[in-house]
Image (cartoon, rainbow, N blue to C red; front, top):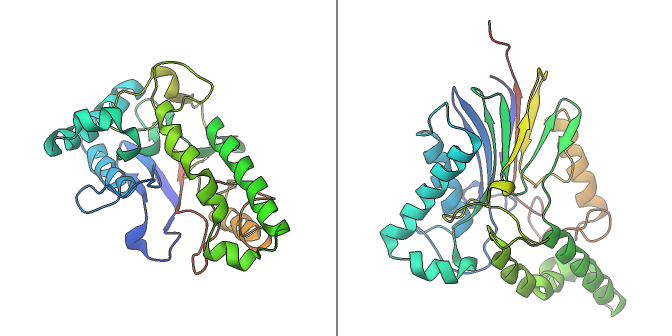
Length: 278
């Protein structure tokens, strides 16, 4: 694997806050997107998404190069579950999933020449874009879009909404309740996968088998659209932020650009060239 470009940036402009991570070894490359916290629970003095992201990055160092997608997800899941066990939280988190440390992840396996997705990280294989959007996010984003539009009708301003996103507040109960479908084995249109210390259903582990790609891009969902270069991906993000800072019209999201922030979400971008075996 040859690293062509990599970039990691916190939405707050303070890298210490960043819940995204990039991992690169001789055998794997990955982007990890710690889930934005919907509670005040902390693990090792970190918010759940950041704690999960850091722990998964460490765990990837120990992952056997020959691991299959299912074996890798099970291994990573066990690492998060061990954290809960050490804190005596397994029973509590079984019935309070909103408090779990969770992350989406996308991994390139050199041994299998595959890309593995759990959650809503994304990738670009040459010119083919692969996403894994959660249906509940589409629903919540549309509700937030409507609510913001109604707030503006009632006299709120874009500036005031960036200071106090009442649209985000309005959908917060939905975001908190959506975790009832996280890694649920009772199949529903709202079910989705995440690495959260509890078993991930097999059909929530997406496997992309590669042939002979010139390059691949792995990224978190902090990019509204992926392009073949970091500059293009950043340019499109900046266009969205400039034209639709609340992210409710051009690019509908569950959150927008807060005043003083650099983006609506943390973002990670990793472009690799896959060298053919001799």
